[in-house]
Image (cartoon, rainbow, N blue to C red; front, side, top):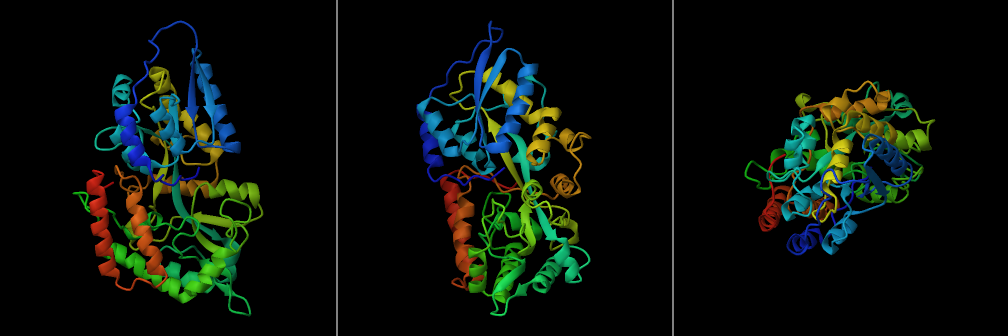
Length: 437
């Protein structure tokens, strides 16, 4: 699974969708014959084949429904189809950040009536997934697999450096990063202990935030970047950037290799420890099975938080203009709540299942490296980012500022964060943004 970027015109497009698009009538329950519905998903290649296998099982248990599965779909295609009245019956998005836009615009229908009808409760899902599939009381989506972030570490490199276990605290992470770093005769980084550069691979502010217990908003939905937790994170991050040297990190990143290929720097032994998602387990098995590595929760600023992390995930819903809503609901319900379906998807794609029952299913393929992420996902302190009508735009505002911060172009940490808080508050107010996860 990949997290899709927030498309620039999503809010505008969905606003137009809500006012301009009509709802096609669903086939009456009990009509004769077989109904064909279409689902659009972001998966491609092997992952798409796994999805089709699971949907084939759905067709066996729902003989009056045939499903056409189309892969490689992005959110901009979903929005365009809804606006034009040509949307499929079911859509899947990799970006839970867009839930607020889909729900608030009415582009995806409210699933609450269907859930009530079938006696389903949001308590089926861990709290983070239950949160990022609704917005202000409208549950327009259900979770279907999750991404969970943790620490991957190279066992051989740690052993060579005399490090007996992966770091558990922020201080240990910095100390180990320095100890594990290797430079060539010219002083260039040949192996990096831990890359602190924001924007490199999965190094996003949102993914680091739970390590410090940093929160994006308060109970009133106001931005809270200028707070001790965020300041502690950015101070730590900048100190490590400065220790490596900003220009040295830029050079290393330029030759690190593509994140989504076999040239990935961690897989090639060029990075000793890395923040990454659970899918990396499958990538390593397919691309570099010889790599001796381990997984662990990310180090944290307090003992209470250790074992937790950041999660996001795929969302699945029914577009307003879907032609066969009842049949679409049957498929959504199956993919999101059926334990066997969730386990098949998790075993095949190596993403984390998103129902409590599937998380504890004995049918999950045993893998100690992957099991780490199941535990992180279930931790009560694991969190996600706020769902707002502005999507991920508030994260993009923050990212623009941190890019300048790590380059040394911003010197006033508290003052800069205070200014970004004001910008985000204005942005969320204009988009009627949301509150605390």
